Length: 119
Image (cartoon, rainbow, N blue to C red; front, side):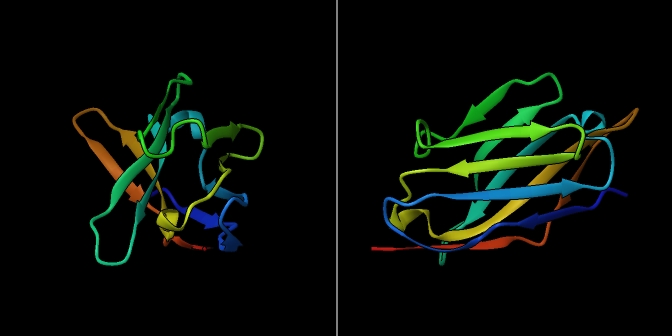
C-alpha cells in the first residue's frame, strides 16, 4: 500500500504562485510514475503533469510554461510549482502514483488539496 499526502494548496490571486507537495510513503523511485491531476467544479478530472521514475516529464498543454513538476528523492516528495496562475486553474489537485507489479499497474491517490485562484 502506498500513501500519498498532498499539501500546499490555498487561495491566491491571478498571476500568483503556489507550490504543492506530495509526500509518498515509499521510495519514489519505486513508483513508476508520479503525477498531478485536478478536478475543477463541474468538470472531469484531468491530467496536469507526470514524472516517471526515469525523470521524463509530461504536461497538459494548458499548463506548459507555467507549471513545473520536480522531485526530492531524499524526502520521497514530488512538487508542483505553479506560476502565473489563472482563475481557470482553480480545482482540487490530486497526487497520483502508479506502481507496477509483476502483472499489473496499481493507481494510488492522495486526498487532494484545494487551489483557488481569484481574479
